Amino acid sequence: MESNMEQDKVQTGELFTLQLPSKHDSITHLETLIEEIADKYHVGDDTFANMMTCLNEAFINAILHGNKLDPEKIVIINAEVDGKRIIWTVTDEGEGFDYSHLPDPTSEENLEKLTGRGVYIIKHLADQCIFNTRGNELELHFKI
Image (cartoon, rainbow, N blue to C red; front, side, top):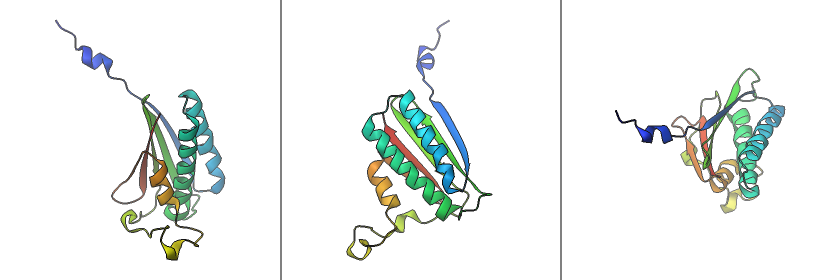
């Protein structure tokens, strides 16, 4: 009887999960997790900086715009590491938003505004950025 060697070679990733209340100081738990994963998987400095920036932006958007700073609502953060990449998912309990019609922060009328750059930054620093249809979940891919 032949064994299925292909199935034996399938490598499953490691999954990390946080459930954080919608408070600004919760971000320290997220930053600690990013540092732990980066150390464990020998993530390069540039990728580490990009992950830290993107996840900070995503978390702040989730607690401010998604959960409206309601400490009873949580933000769920998952990180799946498979050796070649890290896939982060940030989900809030908010209504979501239309991510396809955001104002361009680089246009003349928006250059001096103090907000509105988070999604733009995330899209440029992550290797891949995917919103769910509702707009309350963001998936970020980083090659390691």
